[in-house]
Length: 474
Image (tube, rainbow, N blue to C red; front, side, top):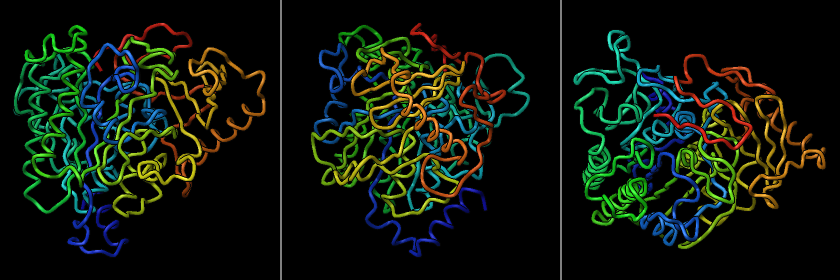
């Protein structure tokens, strides 16, 4: 029995319910993750935005818009690790991004969101950018370039981490290398990738509508990350040049999912959530400071929209501080599963927020990280930044959302309190209630260890200024 299967068995046994009971009455869950979409890009988040995202705006009207949501990191790979495991990527030393043939960073025996839901009777699928590593044959990894030949097979991919179905690619540098399950099945032009994977996702919904099992879709889409390759039918449609067309195509993909739910009469029993893996690359949107890769709000504060007809109040807004790491605990509460102590260590359920029943913040505090190893802790109005250089900065985000005024000197008690809290989170191996766990690497609040061989060739270095970070092809 694999690690994921064993977890699934334990979760079913602990709940004391039959497989048929597991399948009955549980909502379908869809999590769509944009790539490099900034907080200020959708019009529902910034009046006067030059971009068009009608389907995201529709979700804001028909569901809930979070104003203080954050990605688990300011770069791609670590955020995706947090999304699927509910664990802060700093605990494994993952700050940068993987390359084409990097080894997997999610161990086989670690419970993922997909494994959790599969154990609850869900049919699970991933469509899009994986970027969490696989095990490739040595002959391929020693070759030149970023592409494996058609027919190549990789181990330790999505179908070994809880997903029944995978269609996608490893990362943006080889976006045209399409994989089905564990095999490279074709090489296509980058412009064809997002339409292809969107079609696969909607076909999956059509197919699952005929079955009795609930389903979970994790859809990490391409836009607006480089390469900027909008399909011909989107050329000039956004009025914001090619970049805007590419973002518009990402919004179109969301619309295709909504249409598939409607034609199959699944909308009312489906929770759909949409967010992004980090801030926009090299694009800062006032009043937020910074962009992709940075510890400032522009690096990790993200759009986060959720719709669940009959459960989430249409047109509602939530100001609670949440994180994409929260998917794990949220799904667990929805299906009534108890997470093991060694799963979802930094994941809090946002279900009370979604249902409008929260009595207070769902997190005691939230951890942030930059691409170069800077850390921060956020609690209420306060954000304490631990720069890798050892420099401390404290911001009152209620009074200074742009992080222009370091108020560390005038608030020593806040600095001391948040430092103690952050150290407790480090020492306990978790930021949520539960038995203490072990971090895979030592974490210092004055200089973090970066996971050897895991950061990638173009890892973003720590920045203490607002200079633009070269996003590379992560």
